[in-house]
Length: 131
Image 1 (tube, one colour):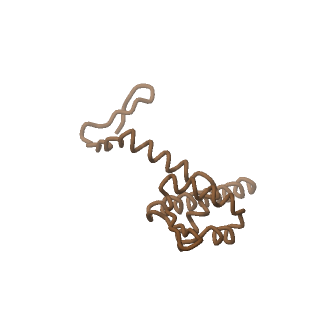
Image 2 (cartoon, rainbow, N blue to C red):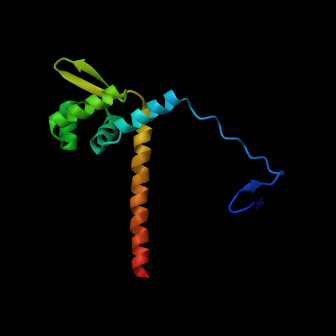
Image 3 (cartoon, helix red, strand yellow):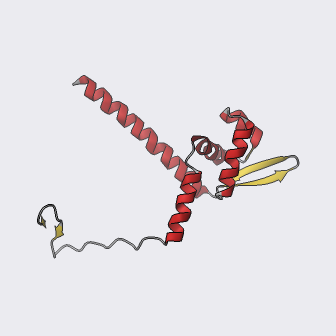
């Protein structure tokens, strides 16, 4: 039950409302923001999705994504600086891998959410046009 003046929300005394946990430290929030900024480019998202399946070198990413080698290298530098990928030299090539699986989950969830939104948007548009 709620009561209040002008939209003010007051809980019934009989209802225990759990308190939210304290927010993370500003240092943690800043680090999370930097990570999300590093992932905020479509090519970098595609790179992370490719590296979910296998460790790859630059030319393999160029072939699978159809993006120029200098651009792939530039995006890998950003991802490496953010701690998303790690490169290991194997002879003349550097093989890249994800640092941990959590990062792949972030990207997969974001892509899934975007796909759901796109499908939902198309469905809403279709229903509106039928009216």
